[in-house]
Length: 393
Image (spheres, rainbow, N blue to C red):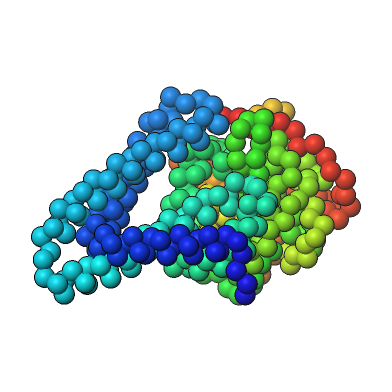
């Protein structure tokens, strides 16, 4: 596979980092790594306090970046100083040589992790060309495989927590649980559920009017049609769609209904696997929410159906209450799951995830029966439509 211009740049950076690590040695490199970790932890706890004083989403990004850079920089500077002090005590020639080699390795490892996490964050910004460039990089793909998924999930959670990019509605109890759940254990996803993930996509975009990035999930019902929530693409022009194979597409919104919270995206160049509409779910049935929690790595979130029935919901702008048939789920639904499919154990669509409870691990999905007319007729929508106003804080 050929290397892109970005690959060559990153390779040069990694070589420079390796040489610098050899010059500085293990203790300095290890000190820098420890300082980076401690600085990141400090930023994690301090950034929520900073955000309380920043109302504008755009300035919130600036505040988050400045806060993180300053604290991580201070942590790394302290770590380097400590590492140098320790290194001065290493006098044996053999120990010095080992120190140099390990310093190069550790320094390169740190840089690789930073590259992977930075690339992951940038690819979540809803810029098709940027996302495509990142996905085409062989170097980024390699270092990403070496980066723990927990690290990428952590970065994604920071992104949504501090930038409010997940835009998932939070609802109180909507339905009374209809009988006790007989067995809380959910069967692990079978092959049919796993295969359904191939039709699940990540959706990102920028709502310029509100100065914010938005991320959610969706699923293909036709090779060139993706269903998602209206609140995921509200105020977004030309959302970016990314499938599990790493293909990146620029989509247009051809159906947008803020009342039902449903939208359809058209992707002319795509040939996506599709999901079939299922028979629906009963109380205590296993259910699987497919999507990208916090805009992070793809995940299958298991759950149980607690209740099903009509509930009074507002539209995405908090107006016009109306009855909608929904499922209430005992499931850890998070920001970024919005618009993803709720599937049964046959891998067929039972509903569309759209909201979660603010505290308990409870999620909500529009039933496939409620959304049926939109799901079945998705191919008939061909002309771009307005995506309305974005959802400001």
